[in-house]
Image 1 (cartoon, rainbow, N blue to C red):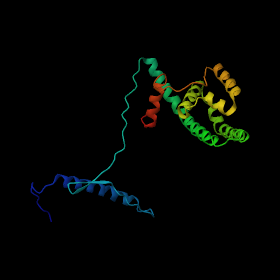
Image 2: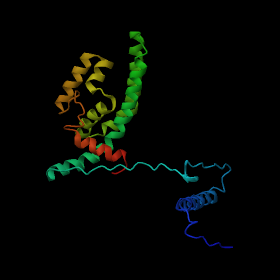
Image 3: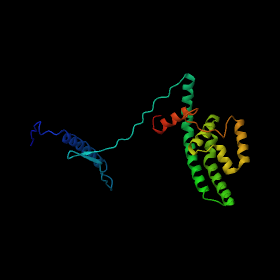
Image 4: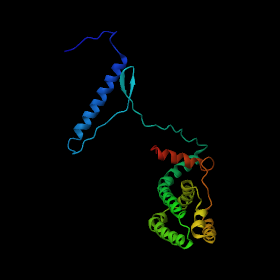
Length: 212
């Protein structure tokens, strides 16, 4: 049985509430139909606000990042950007995985005072790192290898030179720095997100937000 409602009786807040209730009612009904073949059911509780005696569903929407496009000075820079996108997508997962492991190693190492135990611990961790990363990292190009050195610094706050010096000693660090120099790399390279690595930082931000 329908009922007429005068303009004086009409309440915009109540109307909005009914629309939300109808919308979420349909969503819950659809979800319940799709979940009929499952054993366990879950209740969905929405946050809400009370405005002038009306209860209004209160939902925090996921933040949508607005990242301005990179401004290229010339076609050469645009080509470099495209090449960096490809290389970063290859290298970034390794840098983050290695960075996480290195940070964990540093945390555990700080709790070991005995020199002999520290050496044994580092040898074990070195073997683990080699077993996990040796094969895939051998496939990297020279450009990707240089990029990895910078990204490890970005993820750990330490240069590759500092890490080798800490784990293997100063002589090893100098030796591998010399080898790296022969191949055009620098183990002391630091990540400069506001300077020469601004383009790399922009690409990583886009990747992290699922935009490329």
